[in-house]
Image 1: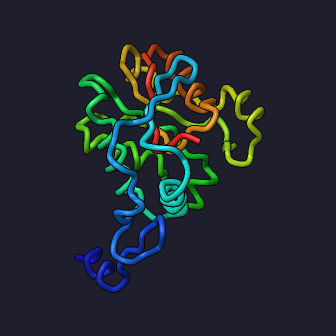
Image 2: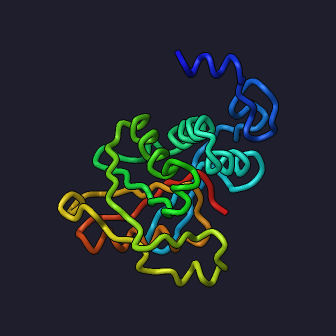
Length: 200
């Protein structure tokens, strides 16, 4: 009820172009199609699209607090990757840095994974934590590539022998995904896949 009143008083504006009426209008919604596939180290990564244009603008709006944009982005990701997740896959989100979590008021990675899990009927496990509050944003490409050991598995008894699919918003060098995968594999998980909203 409250959300309906808010929508009436403050109609949604497209996160891509700003026009009223939809969180992501038809012109800004990426065209239907298969997910893009990338090979990053030992990980097979599927992305809803390239990190540019309206998709980039919508992701940035989500990161800045527009949860309605996150709902649309989760639906887009589910449309592209849900059929390939497999019945035994467990989704594990890449955790947001503590500073970013405080700024946004929510963990966009965890929220994205939970919505994807709900749409794809797959379980979600918050199995990772950052060892520090250091985020990747602002780092050079070389610094990102050499970043290791920033994540720890907090549920080793739950991930051992489990096929895990990592979930993140944007992949650039892939070092964060590989770091997360390594932390989970040290606890006996099988991690060969990741899904993301976009690749840069």
